[in-house]
Picture 1: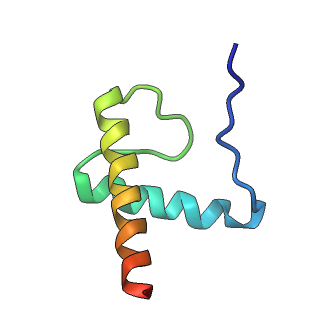
Picture 2: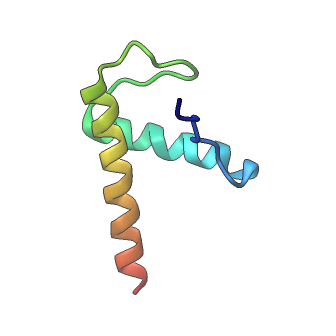
Length: 64
């Protein structure tokens, strides 16, 4: 069985990552709440994750 590995490597970054996730969710129109969000669809969760990756790539490209 696979082991879940979605831990944040730098614990001090948790608050910033949560804020980043909420911003990305708002941008794609997904209503996240603090804490458990197991009631959203896989499609909604994927759109939030995809938006986060898109923003990270844009940030990296700007730094080049």
